[in-house]
Amino acid sequence: MKKSVLFILFLFLVLSSSSAAVNSAEPLHLPPGIPVVASPSEPAPVLRALDDLRRDLQWVLGTPSPRLDHLPADPDAPGIVVTCQQPDTAGLRDRALSGPEAHAVLARGNRVVLQGGDARGTIYATGLERRRGRFSI
Image 1 (tube, rainbow, N blue to C red):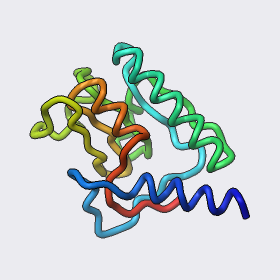
Image 2: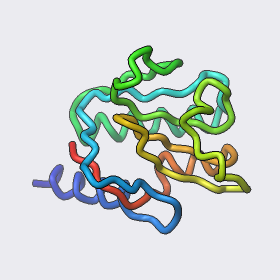
Image 3: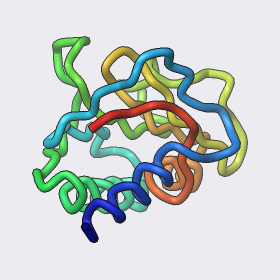
């Protein structure tokens, strides 16, 4: 029961916020063990936030989410992509997002992109603030 309540709280945090958002007509399925992708050259605080996100996903879903340094070759492979400024994830980012602390959570196919305009914005996208949208686990 306690895990169910915490899971609902986690989803509320993931799905509610006031900025740019996931606008999806269909739920986006995030399976347990979904990989989390970020370039190892992202700023150290962003990588720490990524590890916090992975810890929270494991706690809620009961399965570890592997950390990948690069996007999978299969463009349809599900994943959570954490991106700030690195070129290998530039194609997934919203080019209009800029400014200090700007952040967004975007659906790109089977992937969720947690994007920040700077390191602090990326950290916000990974855990402190979330966007409206529909996800199912």
